[in-house]
Image 1: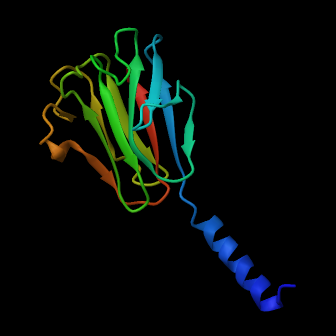
Image 2: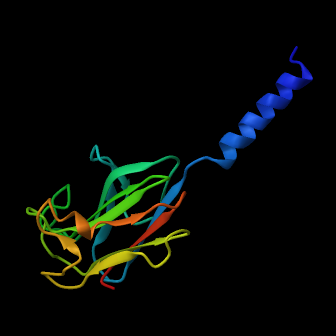
Length: 155
């Protein structure tokens, strides 16, 4: 039988874990009128095909793109949004590093933390995108816990 002190300690520990649980949601807004938004995990698994996706924990190395029929399984030939959502430091960017290329206007913004931080790519050659791996200044970071991400196509 557990003592009252042990029971209390377990209750406090459980409450602490529930309060500090990490969670992030990625939502899509497809204004193009065509195509299917894809969210893939770093291992290639499909996490979403347009619906909101909530990660119970960090979401590391995910990619998103609008599948228009011409994109490869990893968004090749299309505008790519890369993200890591992690308490303490999240980072998201738009990638046009070959074999990725501009396909549709794409953008992202954080919400429920770092509101207003994000980027848009509205034309080929947009200055807010990666074209080579060393252009790290285009990454948009967020230090807030449990931050969420909205991705918009054709905005």
